[in-house]
Image (cartoon, rainbow, N blue to C red; front, top):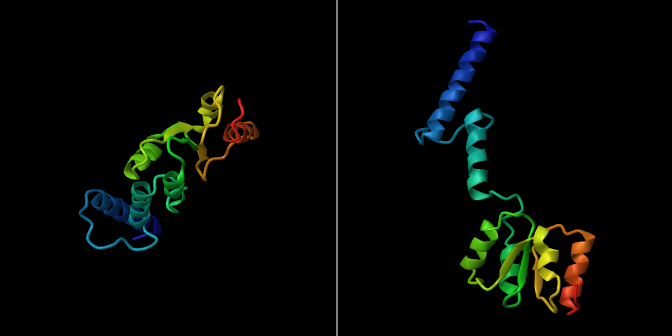
Length: 139
């Protein structure tokens, strides 16, 4: 058997192991460095940690400690995770918004309790709006 044939056999075995893994029929844990192990780790990371900033508990602490009815600013437009988290924490009173909508929500309001998620990067204009709202000044 030549090197090319050995490589093809190795690829076929790797593909079969991935198929078995995805079907839930792979026995034991895939060997480190194999395609099946890489796929397994990818699946686990997607299922257990779909957002790279998750895992420290900081967002939960911020939500728990936020004033009642506060505006909670999230980095992304997809608000499913922070809304679900707020409900699980008993903080359905929080008004969760995407950072793109921040200035629109603050405009014309006085003294808005605003909590910015620790992983959210605001522009200078957005930070200035938050500071003004926290001081009770119109934006």
